[in-house]
Length: 132
Image 1 (cartoon, one colour):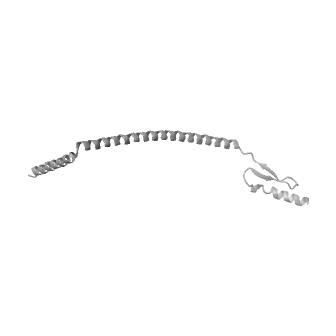
Image 2 (cartoon, rainbow, N blue to C red):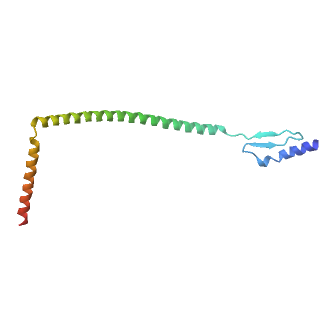
Image 3 (cartoon, rainbow, N blue to C red):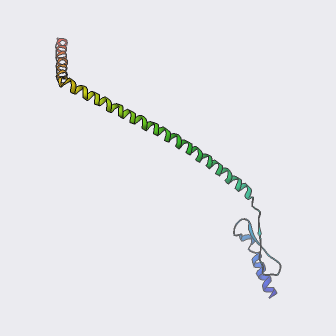
């Protein structure tokens, strides 16, 4: 049995080149059937510090995004108020224009027709004068 134990121990001892992952390796323990694992020390502090820096950067980016969102929200609210005021002004001006058209009667159509005829007559005369 001692020979079998030693063979099992040596077979476990031969597993060291086939490490399952960095940091763990098997070590033979004399004639017993136990396995001893040795964990290589990993420098987790550097990893934690790096992650902490990344978290701080992400926090800063999130704060900047929040600030930008607040600024754009304020800008959009002011723009919306400006648009509402502009629409009200246009509506009032259209109401005044319609009121003035109704008060003056339908003479504006006659004025537009007379203006068009005068323009046509001027262009006609001008074309006759420059042909000769």
